[in-house]
Amino acid sequence: MRHLILMVFVVIFPALVVADAPAPVKVFILAGQSNMEGKGAVNTLEYLGEDPEYGHLLADIQKDGEWIVRDDVFIDYLGRSGQLTVGFGSNPGPHGPRIGPELAIGTVLGDAFDEKILLIKTAWGGKDVAKDFLPPSMGGPGEFYTKMMENVDRVLADIGSVVPGYKDEGYEICGFIWFQGWNDMVDKDKTAAYAERFTAFIDDIRK
Figure 1: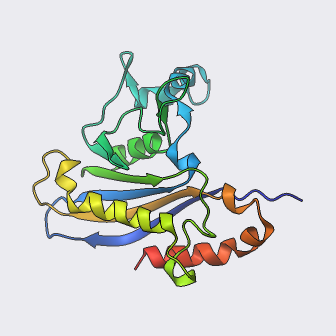
Figure 2: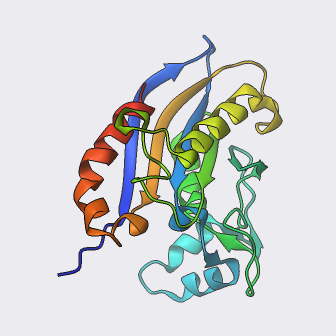
């Protein structure tokens, strides 16, 4: 029997307050492989409005025929940064700009919190936990585990370049959202070791 490993994982951290300020920026890290990169074509979103059950959700991302650009949610995706709107998926394909999970995640978070939201997205297609994201405590760090951590550090070291109006109010790392798994299901040994490796991955990123 074939087993599909498709992980959508959320780690909620105790608030890590870096500066004693009244309204720190709430930071969420988005990581994983191609599904987190985002392959959805922006031009398919128009069809959302035709769905009898979920069509009302289009109003959360579009107004008067224009895509909403959030002024309370900001994103950095491997150096591509700005206010959250459509187009922060992987590189444009034959059907134009793309979206990933960041659009819905950022929309929900922006509506839920009064504070500014920063999404730090680090994702690369075709990567596994067995080698690429291997955590330090399991013999790593893997190349892309290191790149993930370096990218987060880069953004947080210069948060004002991503979040307009930032005035040293500090930030809280509030959550880690993981979307990955396909490349660990193609080998039975990787599949068997996934739970142990990913448990170690969670423990290591919390340190």
